[in-house]
Image 1: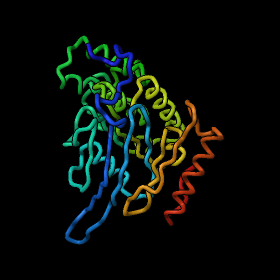
Image 2 (image 1 turned 180 degrees about the vertical axis):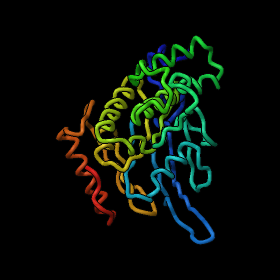
Image 3 (image 1 turned 90 degrees about the vertical axis):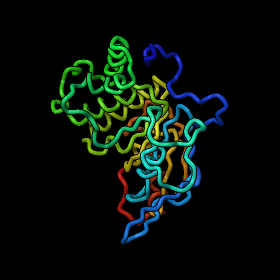
Image 4 (image 1 turned 30 degrees about the vertical axis):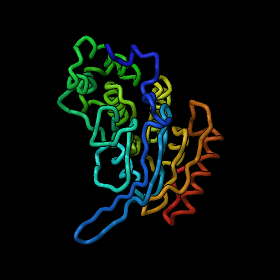
Length: 275
């Protein structure tokens, strides 16, 4: 059996001969060209993500945060520059890089358990192993009692937990999350931030996380990448050397959030960011 339950080592580990990072984006330039406009979305962006770290990306609307994540995930292949994962060029999506979107991409005709095991079935994992893996994932995201519920019976936060469990079930080397908590109420978002910190800590996950919320970035991130307004460039990368778990009310979290917010305000004329 290859389920997470049997692993004593973190899921995300550097491959043999690696240079200390899982993901490397180098001189990424992206244009969106139409008959009416030629828009430079990303301008020579370079970023590396190391094993077991959570890197959060913040920046003004339209600065290319999601575009950068889509390139890293293999969703967008039309760009200049180089994108590698575990030392190999990124060529399309792969199970080693699981994506969690803002809107849960779940199958409404399947119950919670069937949604979580869907990727395992595609991989040909045996029923006994699927059951074991799904049981552990549901326990990890506190959904064991809802394993037979259908998607329409769940709250927004529970749907996101299902999406996270399904992503983790296939043992990705990296999670890529695009504003997964943005549409949730404040209390549910706080709860899921705590959940993600706990899950990432238990399995040693590597996460690339896009958010508009400055305090969320500081709560979750080992590093926060601050992007400038369009065209997107990396303005500064801020280390967050705080222990876990972190909460929105921690004074140190507030101090680092103020630092990130100041960087954003210097580079953008947009309204004040949530802090």
